[in-house]
Length: 557
Image (cartoon, rainbow, N blue to C red; front, side, top):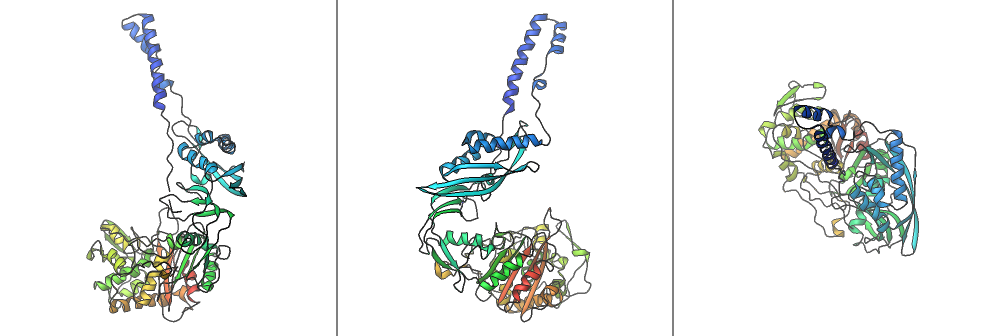
């Protein structure tokens, strides 16, 4: 059962037809008046004064906020029709009757759900929560299903009438547009995932790993030698990057065993760390091999750590620095400009709090995270220079990683003018996640890119991604010096206090439209451990993601 998502389109009425009908009636009335009073100028005047325009005859379309009565009445009518199996009536009460008809029909026909009871909760504004009780029945086997959902009522801009704003999540909160509910033989046998020591991995034990377990089953269920059971499942839309999800298991299949690279001690610690900060994610790798030792997300519905696509902010300066050193545009201990402002491509860039470093070195600019030190070099680089560096040295942005579950491999698109300059400091079109940025630190620590993986490639003989070249020894040495100095004396020093040995780090803050606080990033290594984390809308990386990463690095070396 592969991955498949569709965006619902709002149903539109055509009031022009009604208006046309009114115009015909009014025209007929006008002709009647003209005949009654005769021809001539006086008659023309009379006709004009007594005729009513089609525009005046059009019914007024109601606008403005919905009343409490409109919300509750619309919600109740929709839920009642759905409960009674009146699919057409229920779908007609939504903003997308076609999509609603398909999903509500499948609710009974494909998901085999019967005895549906829908109980509305207390309205909050235009939103109405409701509880669902139903029975899943397939080939003589039945199991109960209960869950909560919600709907939002909106006003149709064309008719002014209230309607349910259709989205697949109305039917079930785990559904996205394009997904379907299906009960039957799963097609994909269950798995028993184990850590590197053979201990079983469960979502109850490690809450962050629910999406990982779904991904492992989808890829290795058949290969691991298990037997499929009977289940109610969410089947993802064709454009979805998420894995199918089991909601109810009617009969158990026989699981096959899949061994992962996860370290149980580090995984438990990672879970505990992200639980302390909302919207946080972290990944820990072994640089010498690329093995993923831990992955955790504070939010469990989406695996931001593996699949997130976020601007990495100043942690991107690790890659940019390697590029500048390679091209002799910077050197750790040589003087380097760090003005308050620098304008490039029509944009005026500045440093945090508009600081400047007079007569400082490139190492000082890196450790302090001076934006203008990097922006000032944009004019000396080709539009594709950063893209090539990310791909050829760090193995990123080629969409070819095969870690064992779905992942996003980073994006460093070719850009020009101001966007090219912004990319140098991890903004513009650059997108990463903690897995990508942990790999960046791992590449610096080990000296070469090794694609991260959660399941050994020997399990399915898959080919891991490679980088076409490595940094020169001189560039690598300077890059390690920059990260070590930042860990000891720069923006990462406070978080890395107490992390001893062969260490290096870089902080980052990425501005996001609509957020009061930036996303805080932190990437670092200690010996044969590398880790990276992000706290969305958390603030500066050293204060938010830094403590999470440092705590995990302290556990090994």
